[in-house]
Amino acid sequence: MTSPPGVCRSPFASSWRNAYIVLGCGLALVVVVHWTTVASILQTWSRDPFAHGYFVVPTVLYLAWTRRERLASTKPQPAFVALPLLGLLSWLWLLGTLTSAMLVQQLSLVTMFVAVTWAVLGTAAVRALIFPLGLLLFALPLVERLAPMLQEFTARVTVQMLTLSGVHATLEGHGISIAANTWQVTEACGGINYLIASLVVGYLYAGTVYRQWRHRLAFLVSSALVPLAANALRVYTTILLDYLGASRVVSGMLHYLFGVLVFGIVMIVLFAICGRWREDPSTGEDPTFLPPPVVPVVSMRRAVLCVTLAALLVVIGPVAAVFWLPRG
Image (cartoon, rainbow, N blue to C red; front, top):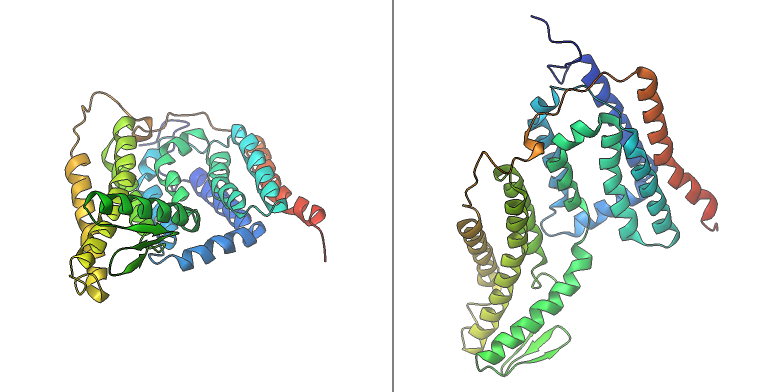
């Protein structure tokens, strides 16, 4: 039995095989010409205690693989509409390079992977892959930028909770002083590790289980708010136990185990409260769960033109930086 004209029943057919090869070359080109920015992201991952960044790319690839059947009902359709976005990202990367704004460079680079995928595979394919591609945002090294804000938040909330409990506490910088001791709210104590881990779990669960966007967004927001509140409660109880004389409980290995216990309870509470929402399968359909529509076969000339323009937009930023950056 033969497949209907214009329909690709297997993602391993020649059109998809060629598209995967072109996409792989395009993504490799992005890595090579922006290697300095890639290296900066890898260095930040290495400083992360959980090193969650190293798990992002394999997870994205696995999730994309699980959606291969949705890609099988269409042929790759290079998207010229993605080229303006790719040009904008290349310009933003150049602007970040000229102004030494590393976060702008890193954000532009990560988004550039999505834009290249869009340009090579087309809109229908990207719609089917939007969930795994969205996970790439967790590859951004935001830990070092969010940690100071979370330190400040946790320290202030903890002092307020101690005061309401009748414990006289003063705040100096990120240090909390009580009658018998002074506790320093470090970056780890700010809850950044809880937050990132919870957001990753929340994103994967929301995108896998729920189809309605209101449930997805609500679960993701809960994945951020619940660990922040729990971490402030953890710091508060730690200092309160020390104030009450239970210093051995909040020191050494027990302090670490207490943190692990709190995170486990946070996950249980999160899934118990927000992980059991029911959805009507007849409403709220998410187009990313539906097979992409059948599209006509694109001409080879248009495909080559689109891919060539995408490659030029990828390299134009680094080439311009070579001429515009001061030398010496």
